Image (tube, rainbow, N blue to C red; front, side, top):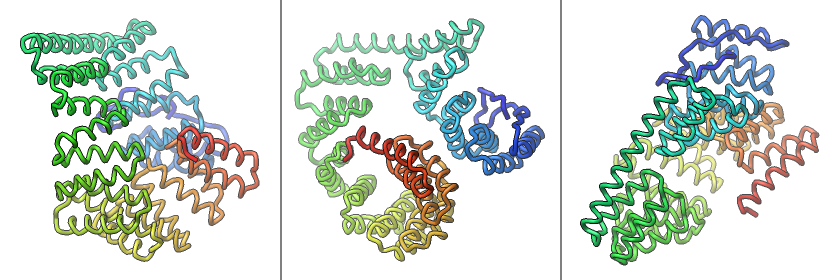
Length: 478
């Protein structure tokens, strides 16, 4: 499975069968069997064989890559993503893994992740015209047309015969021209009614679609000049700041909106969201409470309020909030996904209160209603861990990871429990998987350090703790 196909169909399955890939050493038989199975189109057998190759040599990036590619053929996108990321973590120079991972992200509509992956690939292979083409496609999907144009041009510089890049470049040019024609039309409308704030809102929205944030802000500020207390201007400002991810300005803008219209439940909820991102938890709670008081059926605000209670260790209030949500769900007022989230939040709160038997009961009830719910398995595992029933916990963590292979928290907690029972090799693999999924995860590096300490590897333990401290410092944590 050495040759990778960049073009894939809509079900995330590479179009061409992989070619034979042989390694020397103890993995030879499993790899050979996996490739033979792939050549005859039996990707389940291929995945089984490559999984055995991984078990025999967990630190081999190519083995992880082969397994991920087989999983991709089987349509198991999440497992494939997790596998590609682990392969890259083990072998940062494995360009094929970047290419397939980037394509898979694109097919799933995860264009920002796709773009980041392709850009990492370009650092390894700056003369790869196919990757430049993929970068251009990712920018185009994000409506970042000027960046797409540059990427397509670079594709053609590297490979003037790339007809797909030339075609995509023409398409982006047409889209860009259409956008600017729309801008000119909106400017003419403003000329006809220069005192009408609505016209500036239309212009600002168009600039926002084009990700021209300074121009969007300029138009929104012009609206404020025309109508300093006009709600429409602040709505536009909020939309711009939200898309830019400017949490301080977004929070300030929504604070002004609720002053203008204190009966707007949605605005209060948005204010709560941005206060929460600012770590102003008391203000966030106050805003969410306002939203719920104004609109008792605003269930997203109810969930956000419950989550903040839980995060700030106000467990009794969180317990009550989640119990109310479960009751609403049982009455049919919530969608199934929301009812499952309510059960999971309730189990999480009970675990935080060390009421493990009750947490087990709620998690089992959740799994009885929603089979294979990853969070149900995770909360069940957490409760078993709390009771010291580590073997049962390990089994439930594994079920959780099978249901959600991209959850770094699940991998880290499983690693910690495996460490507790002395399964250090498995623990090490899981901690490293957590880091591959979330390289900024402080807890995973701390778990890694504990495993190294337990296995008498002091230098590696020190390096892992140093990385944890660096990440903590970068995030502004004590």
